[in-house]
Amino acid sequence: MKPSVSVIIPAFNVEAYLGAAIDSVLEQTQRDVELIIVDDCSTDGTAAVAGRYQDARIRVLRNAKNEGPSQSRNVAIDHAEGEWVAILDGDDWWKPRRLESLLALAEGHRADIVCDDLLLVPEGERNPSVTFFQTQARRLGRIEQPFEVNALKMAVDDYGFLKPVFRRSFLNAHALRYNPALWAGEDFDFLLRCLLASGRMVVSQEAMYCYRSRPGSLTSDPVRCLTRIIDMAEALSASLDPRTQGEVIAALGRYREWKLREREDARFRAPLQKGAWGECMSLALRNPAKLPRYMPMVGRQLVSLAVSRARR
Image (cartoon, rainbow, N blue to C red; front, side, top):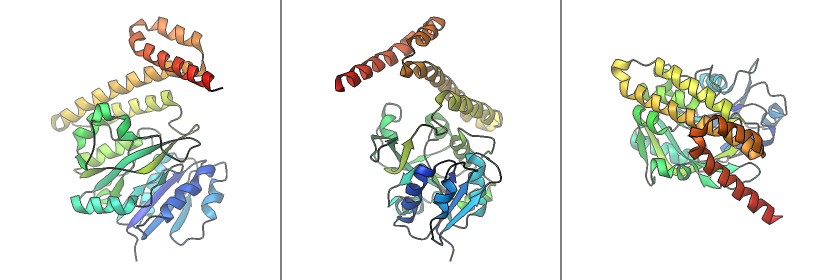
């Protein structure tokens, strides 16, 4: 009997975290799942962690070379047998009812794509500090019930951080796969292309996906990550037909400008957090028009330093 859900984990050098991710899948209240782990040529003990589980529901695949997260997911999707495909990163984990809850939401709304809020967990901790929607409340408003997302709303509000569950027949019917060239921004790109193919996406207000922020992850270098996201937005916009997708193209332009501002902030924040005040001063002198954006960051850093010293 085929599983209801194929869970796919692209794994690269996540030896310290992969066990928690696997355990969270095996502990789901939705029992009829398969787990496909794609080891992307890890140089640590990731493969050994994956291989120690003696569970018939788990398959471990290995890339011949380091392909990145997009192609690793594609490999897993091509091997999947479930009605649904669920994305889980190797350093994250789920609450036990996540799959059961999201599948019920999908069936109730006849959705092709479902996802939920993220519980943001700092490195070294087990409990979340805040949820993703809470951090975005000023921009997105207060979210208290499930809501639908179309292509325009995706481009305007950016739900690319979320980790979806996809109806596999929808992906195959439209030949949808991740862009293997993307090592950042791949989730935004893929979700938007799914929505442009008339996929129906519903987002739960519940937070059941535990997202770990850690050094060494692909998002731990924000300047490089944002540069890749900016390039992704430009390429995606160029691929659309302005006669039929003019609003989405315009929204992608605003998205790109937003990410450009974020990158400028990240370039200033990096030396600030290291205490490289001379480099911060140099950046401020070269960009005096950006001082109104820089000064609040300086203030927050000074407060953080004062609190840290007071605790010693």
